[in-house]
Length: 216
Image (cartoon, rainbow, N blue to C red; front, side):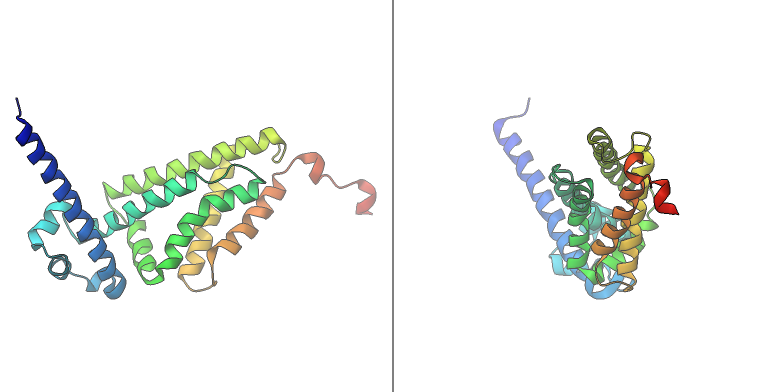
């Protein structure tokens, strides 16, 4: 049976490991932003973090895993904000609130975002599955919002909520990629325009119907 001092020592070691991991991640983000993925090195990150290169590798395995961990942790925080977004108001406003934390994160660090997005799209296991799980959580949330909108009469009863959520994701990434490629100044206005048009097309049939006389 562990003594009290052994339990204290165990907790202290765990807190130290967590603090070391957090410090390495913060330094790594700065390196990736300044030097890109190819230019950043485990040795340089370790030196600035005040640890040995072996310590970095012990926590993260390799440079790609270190980059993915840096993105994954920040996405977790953004997902928390996204899922807590207000469920009041029109569907278009609720969906805009879902994407806002993600767009705000990327726009606050444009150089790092280009590196993160490029590398995360090509992530290998286990990071590929971890990023997919994060995306699925947001998708399930959007499915729920779509079903709520159907109950309120904002969307037609025949609208497939899962397909609607897929369109949401497509518009999100389309706008984000357009911004990363510097084709647009900000991703959110484009996303909102695309989403508004899609919602209008998926609205109640009675609202979309055009009287025959107006077509003449």
